[in-house]
Length: 341
Length: 256
Image (cartoon, rainbow over all chains, first blue to last red; front, side, top):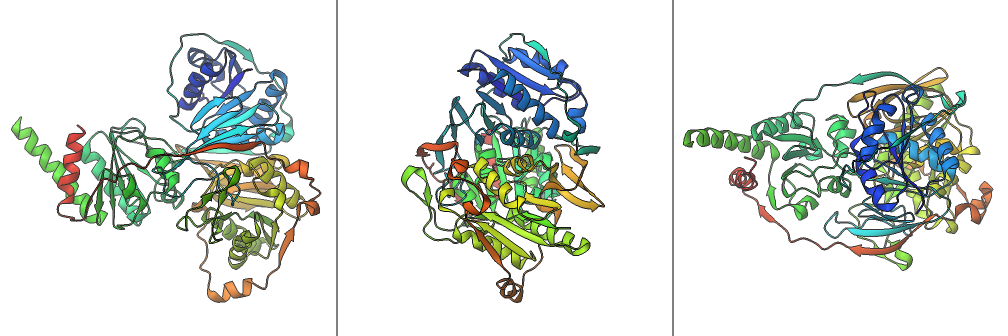
């Protein structure tokens, strides 16, 4: 196979989005010629870690215009680099920044794009556990979420490079200890590609363990009825200790919880020891983000909720009764346990 | 200001499960779906913008004949007109083909703004709007939880992992909206009946100047495997019993 590239999102301090390191680790099992493309402040500083994870070449530009103007200049540059160097495959993480760049690159190059991929078998062959279903005729996910889910093999044809958006956590990030050559990207980006502009960045505070690292994840869904329910889940997480709160996409969309808490196909992928699903019906969109959990507890008032098909322990009941009682049990156990020691 | 809003038909997720037909295509027994809920905030936003600034809203869909149901819903929510691109050649089309067809259909319409959902509820690919923006050579602002039109530009709050970014771009532009952008209005029976009188234009590919060679998909399913069902876990229906059982499980997992 020809070159495999990874589109790497970088932060100004040189940090690399974890997805890029996972993808590089996979890329080097596919082809000897692995490239990473990093655009924006921090790109050169990121070259070392990208090399350690398998990039032989890092195409880097620290030009702030890539950060100041979302998607269009990055897509222009990536398409131009691909025309010059002709990789067979470009892998992207699942973030919206990456989706935006990949979507535009697809129009510029006319190549196949497939999203929500679980495994890359070759330059023209990927595998998904949930797929598209526009209408009868499109590959699609069967009802019933993960149990009984379809594993779909998709063949990609047409012009290269093929564009593949991979789910977070599909591959492990494994350092290889190698070094990359840094290729300075020095492209003239036309002013016509700088139309959208980032005016201001607003950051909100975040406390407690990260969703991806917590041993217990408490996920909230529409069944919680409103943002108040999330305060209760926060209390439960604190009572457990090493726990973080996540949420489903409809809840994020409704503004009950911030986007960083989204678990699912387009949010984060979590693999805790215990996942506690509260008021979550069990849409496939969400299930793919938590199916790696070792044990699943589901609390839902609706006996027929599909989430129960995926739970080791299902509780049919009102979250606002069960969760406070559980918090009390946890606190009592802690006090009792401390006394016994 | 004239707005084109994308309106995708999606199957009813609680409807009867589809069968797998030839070439691994899904066959649904009945057309019981409708407008993708992800598209409703976009329709609502488009209607409000047209009311505030003058202009018309056109809902646009690519799909089978029963995708008309999605457009009827968009019309009931306040869109002024609707276009459905329907053609047997489009069966089995992929993201790029869909974007090309949408681009050709939009190019025929007057517009200042194209609005789409962030991603569809069923496919969740989340790239078609940006491919469309590039094909139409439009600037874009995506993943917006809030949108304002200020003279000749659009200003959005784009959701990020840490909060939000304020992003602006000149019109004409394409914007993708999350459900937080607008709460769809209540549709009365009267609205639904009135909406039936609004026009729905049906266009075959030929009317868009597209040839069969333009809509050849670049991906196809070559194998499908159904993952095994795992045995169902225990169900506890006694709320008094529940907390103790959860605690037990947490203790077994070594996390409490």
